[in-house]
Structure formats: structure tokens, C-alpha cells
Length: 149
Image 1 (cartoon, helix red, strand yellow):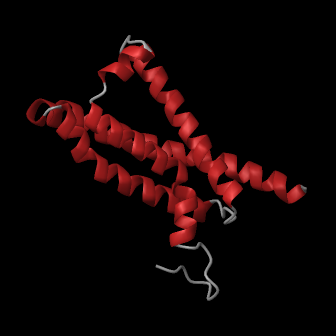
Image 2 (image 1 turned 90 degrees about the vertical axis):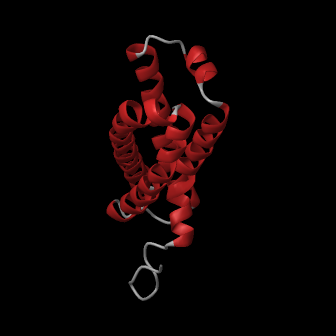
């Protein structure tokens, strides 16, 4: 039972760190996308151009937090980490949209481009599952003590 409690605390810390890394990178990329790419390329293309960069951020962040917090390779711990981070990300986005942009959540959802919005939803799912995915693709502790690539 003590191990479960430690894993839960570890998962919470990792989830908060994972959220912070990805949210921070997204904030930085967004501050480039909105003033520089959107006026030249339009909202859809600008968001689609940003997506591969965010995918790399999500992947590297998930690998980093798994290693940094020594997350056990169990499905429950990895999914708890990813879904906590997703919840924090969605909460932050809702706060930013409603408080800073003065729009309701409904207005924000209705304003999303159908193509880039669908890609964004897929990226949110990948974000939530990435701590588990990196366990399956790059186990944190291979038998030799070296990470498998």
C-alpha cells in the first residue's frame, strides 16, 4: 500500500511537470504563431505548421518526466500522469479563453477551424497517452541498464 501512495505522489508531480513543460512550450510557440504565421498563412495552416513541433515537445517531455520522476512502467501510473496533465492543460486553456479573450467556452469551440481543430483534438489524446506510449516504445530501464531506442 505504501508503494501505491508513493506512485500516486510521483504521478501527480510528474503530471504537473509534464503539463508545465508542454504548456510553456505551447505558449512560446503560440507567441510566434499568432503574430507572425497567422497573418501570412491563415489560422488553419499556421496551426497545422505548429503541430509537428508540439508533437516533438510532447514526446520529449513525456520521455523526460518518465525518466526524471522514475515513473513505474505500469499502465495506471502512466495514464494517471498523462490524464492529470491533460486536465491541467484543458483547465488552463479554458481560463485563458474565458478570462483573457472574454469569450465563452461555446464561442471558443465554435470558432475552431474544423481541420486544425480535429488535429488539435488528436494531439490532446496523444498528449494524454504519451507517458504510456513512451514506455512501450522506449522502456525507461532496459535489462542492460541502457535505454532501448
